[in-house]
Image 1 (spheres, rainbow over the protein chains, first blue to last red):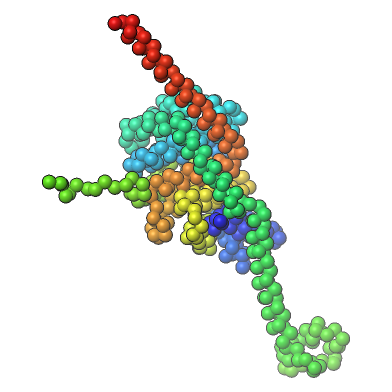
Image 2 (cartoon, rainbow over the protein chains, first blue to last red; image 1 turned 90 degrees about the horizontal axis):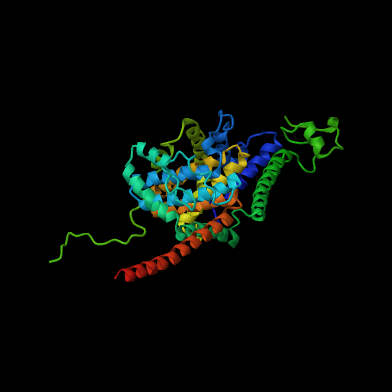
Length: 259
Length: 185
């Protein structure tokens, strides 16, 4: 099994561009010659990203992975309302719960900690009920109620989601997704497998080398075709220097050239 | 007489099509965010769009989506966008704040779903989108937080234990209530 649409494909394309870029002393990856087809995508992506760190601060709400998860969790509840699909709201709850769990990593605290993910989101009522937490944070509800959407419905969704996230099935669902992902990776997909990446990178580079060799042979043929075997001299437009390169024993004075 | 106009019951799964759009996702996401955060996430979205929809990369993306490899479309798209974010983060040498990855991924995933839906490559639904989002979340958490799985298991154990404790308390309470009722008669 292989992910055609995988990190390997993209990373290889990028790596090839990066490699050439570094050889040529170019700091940023840019599409270069024949690699444009391979590396253009990621290169243009990086170009689009350029200057991000110089944007004048990145915002406290984006400092951690869990904060981002809460933003998505909150947004998903909004999407659930916009689309009228409660399942999407529940997914928002799961993402939120993931953020909450992840916040223990961010904060270096135990999983029962109430710090981290909750109030920092700015999302629409993202915090869900987890053991040791207030089921729905009042501040978040306040934010929800000011949104130009159906606040009552969101509150209702939040209540349902609170129960959903607190259930073993929600934990099972998240665990299952991660286990599935691990399984797919371990099935030889090679999506993040370094050996596979290297192999494919080598293939790509070999392909480039092959093209390089072909171009080189072609160019050589063009230049040497002007030399006439068995004769002292060459056809135009070769110069004495070219002939001397072919056979250094010849002297310029002995050459005959056509004009 | 049976009402002929009454609509037949439809199966719940795989119906409804796709109503999630990148615009809706962005609207819901940006609703309560400051301009600074919007700018950062917007930049990551833009970079991801370039990676997904620049012609040469999009050819590869489409090939990957169309490939018959036994993967669910939701897994494929969720993992795909997750990997785009991972590559983008790595290649940017960490200049993207971690907190921007999942929000940007939400919009990128929605855009990719729109693409798959509108081109008719595969039938996709909102539920598929939800599954993909969870998968993308798993990819990002698994990649950047090595403890995530362990934490999740611990959280699961605690939740299950709490549930069992509640179940044990309920019969005891009922039993006690029964004794009280008997005493009252």
